[in-house]
Length: 382
Image 1 (cartoon, rainbow, N blue to C red):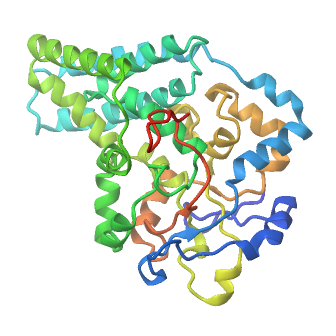
Image 2 (cartoon, one colour):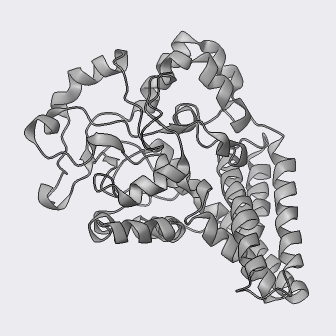
Image 3 (cartoon, rainbow, N blue to C red):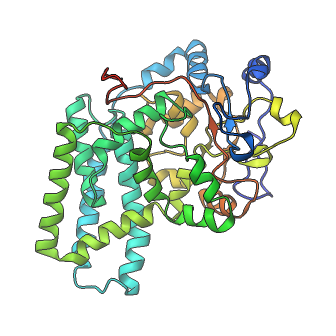
């Protein structure tokens, strides 16, 4: 795969022409970059499109060309011992720091270098488990997710599951995909300072935004998640002190802040390069840009290969250990897609490049479905 190497590490590799580009050109007349409804284009600069999200189409094409990829689907038992190891590591670190001042260099460095990396790993373990990729049993996966949640300090694994599965079923759909920034966020944070604030506190945006978009009904697994987390936190404070719990919560914050591994949050679906926020008539007629981007660097070793994000969205039932094999088997479908070369570079470019910001997301006003919860008239969804 040809890649530019002398430019910014966050530069998107240009995509060459292929069949999907030809298909896209036939439907470009149906696409638009102005939002539906009565929100004016002057106040909304997202990439609005009425075409289907690309992953279903590519998945069907890959299965037709390489039916053997379906053998890659299924749980990966290695996830369980890895979760146990990282949970144990974080508990030991929290206990070791129980007498260390919070503002001391050892405490802060440990929270950033070890704690944030470990908790980001647990975030993405929960992501894997959400897709039922640790065990065959759905219940076993839910319970493992609650276990993986413990060092994060705040219960979230049960609510993450329906929101994230909806993200897959409704990629880019306004009002359903809670990974999308709202117009208010994009407008208010449309500056270097605003984007720096977002990159620093993005974990809070991802935690709070879903509840602002739509509410999920509470279930017994939510209750178990909360009870288990509160019991763990109380026991940790009782036997190791408040600084131990503070270490875990600080680790979670730093994991979603200005940390190399946190670059994946921005890298996965934000549009980079020269395609962003084009306002001229010619650009308004062109097809919407790619909306998912992969990263093939070394940080995948710490993050359950979440960088292989096109591959993951194409085949959510393929576990982290087999995504590279999927890429190898169907390489003709992936080698020319735009990709990132550095998550650190992604954060840097996102903050400083005036052509990149929270507006740079592909949105669609229809399609998809909600996983979990109920519809507006009490009908079950998903």
